[in-house]
Image (cartoon, rainbow, N blue to C red; front, side, top):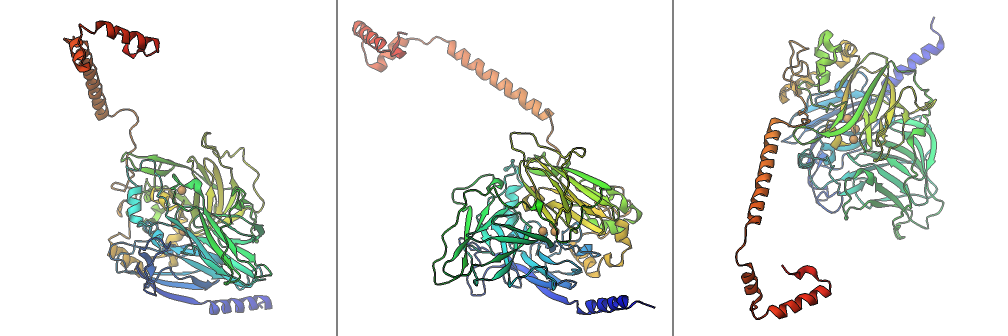
Length: 630
Ligand code: CU1
Ligand code: CU1
Ligand code: CU1
Ligand code: CU1
């Protein structure tokens, strides 16, 4: 006989399924030129420009679901000249890897005029997330929005909830910027400098508050490049959630948020309404190659207690060094440090030029180059070869993970910049992060036999920054069969190839009924002309033959090429001939020098012999030696 508790649980779970809601949305992505009031879309107020919106409006809607709900989002590509895709940042996509979004990794790109159904459940995840195009820079053109999973059992008290997005804005289109960025005319890989920082997709925003109220503020950096500092005049943030993970409360007055990170904080307002306050954001200038004079480094926004009172003046800080270090956050779940790793992936980050003169980004000397068949589709079609990394290409930094292994990602950053790394399909424990190493020193790499003490309850999230010329160690359990990208979330660096892909339990993917391609997915592939079977080279008869796969540009040769040697010999010859010519003409006698000079000075040589000697003496005595007798 069943115990009453088990019966109760069974009934309860049936109820949970019954109450789980399905949210169906139809969105057509297209360029939006005008706001509903007819004015031009002009995010920073300085420069009207179209942005990519949904159903004719921009910014994109904030999508809200509850824990356990199902999402059915029909994305129609309304743009007539480019493909698109949609990624729900932070969603595990358990059993639904093909709904993850990154084109050519888990799905075929959606061509113009076609519709792709993103159909998945949010399971037990809760908190602040976002969604964005995972097709070349499109989210920088506006295709980004907030995705919130509400929790009826939210662990902290608050009165009202507010959403705040931060990002940076460019006046030029992503495609044009990318073209200039990935160019031999930009050999140092200098990232494009944004025109402005945005706060809730605008500037000089106002937030009207009630006194004596506790707000739950969901802060999301939906940018593609710079981290931002965030602080308020005379108010404090109490951090309660990061990247969908509840944490023990931590109070700070200065936050540092990289792109793609989320901080959910409590803010309690003052008792009185006799003053308005500034809410400041600031770009991390260390990430900019140059700082143009007209770039406003600080954004001033407003906490408004009383509309009739003047808005606050900018509230500047003497130093921004003392921001909150997320490494010390403790998950509320008290999830312990996972056991030692079964498999360690060590990856060295570097930027360098290849033979075409373009600056690329590398993990272990490989810059990510798109496969001809989306990796998930290779895993599904490769049969027993699916467990062989070769199938996924030699230029994709592919790693096979076995089911339920504990994985360490050891990331050594040999570059002098900070990078916010993001893992799809998982959250990870951040078990070690070394401090920044100055430019004038050598980078420091992780040493397994001499590492710091790891925290008992490490911070957990899905996006984390590594310090310049330094390292970090991330740990997670491979309990989610699928294909997952791990990459720098600076879109420019992803364009440069700073990504690896994890093929997690490929046989588990093949054997799962929910992971099989939907009919809609197959249709999209056929419309866009991408094969649904085959290895990274598109070969579906011999999965171990990679002939014809996409490869990175050749390395710049070390030493001299034959062309270089010929050029060098001829330049040297030309130089020598030039010197000979100068010497030859220089040694020739010049006739009648004295007469010519005398003619130029208009003097009579014979009569003025004496007076010119006088002039010489005088000049000599004043130290002017330039007229010494020839
Ligand atoms: Cu993601
Ligand atoms: Cu993302
Ligand atoms: Cu990066
Ligand atoms: Cu991604």
